[in-house]
Image (cartoon, rainbow, N blue to C red; front, side, top):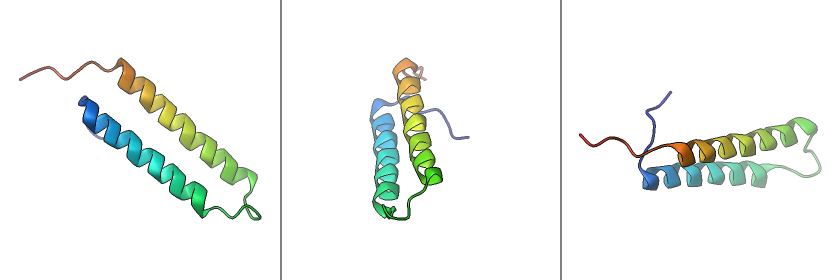
Length: 65
């Protein structure tokens, strides 16, 4: 696992990257060939992003050194 991100700008960059990955996966799907497993994976990606947003909301700023 990576180091916890406390900086709000870094959190925003992380979330933007995850959303971009989601959009890339969504764009790559062929509507005619998309199956239930594909839909489940998209829903899982959304759930993971939501969990990360909640974690970031609760995370206090890193202590100053």
